[in-house]
Image (cartoon, rainbow, N blue to C red; front, side, top):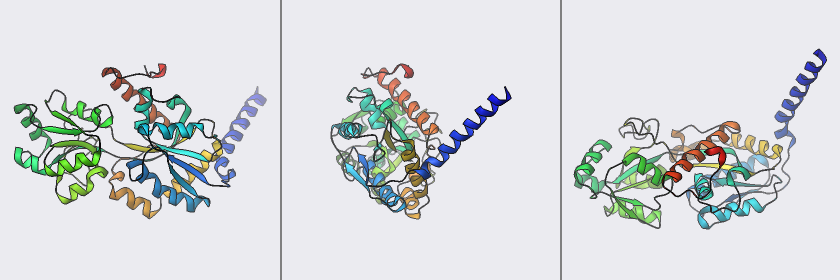
Length: 331
């Protein structure tokens, strides 16, 4: 029995040592491609490009971003899925791809066929308002806004590109029975332009979407979807303050196709973790308020977070009668 126990312990030690050494053993020999399923200048593209530059320096091989756009991110996902799982193709993804999967727009099961390997940032959504509109209504914070809307149903408008995405979910949970006038848009820049001019009153998005308009004074934050108040807006109420169970915000993570060598994944994660210490990356995070929320660690913690996101979005889509693809382990 003692010999068997000793053998088992030895095997555990060997596996552990192999796992620790895998990142060091793997050597990238050629260009690494990181697919971005959205266009130049978007949130995902803006997040992965500065990281790719740092990874190029750290790994000693080119790390190139390939924008494969269309179909709300599905084209880039499908492209990534068709590439060999050889450790040289990765993808930047967000919860938008979870939504596309649950909506039945993907040919594969995204939840099972691509795995998150490291998170770049987890930003914070906020409800922000036209300064012109709020002055007209005599409103300066969330509490005053809810009181005004209750007294003036359907007078206050919200610019929304899609009511079925994360922004729409945040808005619905926060506003509940408040009678708001939803105005649909096809482009985020149009929302922001009308918001600045007071042609629409409210919108939902990340700070990075409207930081310039907030700095110029055209737009003001009303409610932050976060567990705590932001250091940059300490006077702005957060959902935790007002008892609203809504904390969803855009996140960006690097994904790998199932079957990708663990050594390649470990080596890339090690490089990302080194890149996080670079002052240029830290400044980038700070400028966009990406450093206001902690991110999940690579590995099991990140995978559990993704599954929790899947569960929340699955339940929301089921409630909205929009769920087209379900997973037994999410029920």
